[in-house]
Length: 371
Image 1 (cartoon, one colour):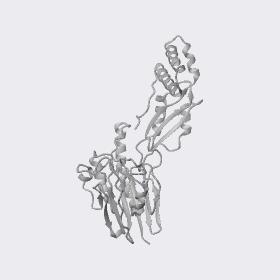
Image 2 (cartoon, rainbow, N blue to C red):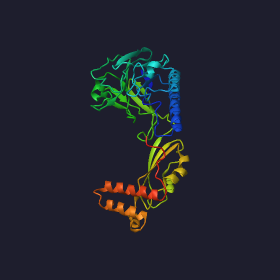
Image 3 (cartoon, rainbow, N blue to C red):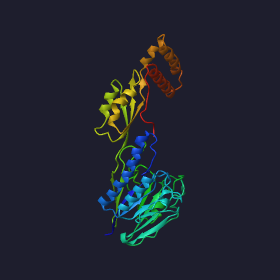
Image 4 (cartoon, helix red, strand yellow):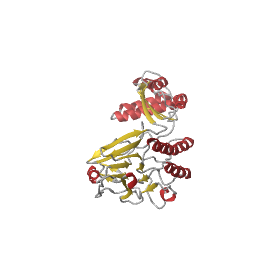
């Protein structure tokens, strides 16, 4: 029986700016991304993969640090098997791109044309096809393409693009095109959430998602894929090689101390991870986010705190006081009562929260800005 085992990964986005973090931690995260390449190489060896398909956006832009290029070349070379790269919209191929400047090892093949081309690997019983983005956008690359099937050979396609998004600017692909492609497996990139194994006609396809999150739109488990092709079909297993996770947690603090509520809601191990904690519920006064941050930040690599609590209606009782607080609340209460809808009332409540915090010499803060 013919079999072929490969590693499929995409969307590493090396040298991401991590703009929402302080400069020191952003630099640390970029260094950790380079370490991801070493873990990828170790996985190839541990799984005894015969082939590696990297489906674009390995790099976040063409502004690549020297160290990143050195680590990329070294780790890809250490895999010791054929490696194919299909540049995507972030790392598109051009004469100025890192792929053109870097001296990559002999086992690495980078697709450089915005048209599908093939490479025969008779020693593996495979043909590998692929194409490159040559600018930030790409028209449909698979439209009208079909490869001939050869007995005893697997046809593989490495490509960056979107399936089922008709008007996509990033190589739109249809399931009908996949089914007609003549491929046994299509290794896709671009979508950062893993798809699991899918099938269109006789063609299997998947995108592995990103191997490690970079923001709160990429929370939870991340992975790369180990794909095994045989005469009987295709299997896909995920492997987690990430170091840190992004997680969002909403905590209801109604009737309890916010710090206690957060501690009660947290899982056991968080020190490696990046968290956004949003406080919800009803309170008599704004939670002290500075106090919470000081007590919690050692539990995480990085922490954001957000306050989405509602003030209890009783807070407006102070509007009758002959004080600056009373005058402030009377004006806001008038606007609250005149609000046209719940969204406007929420905005007035938020203004009250900020104003009362300022009057109490407190400050509403977010530890580390949004990414």
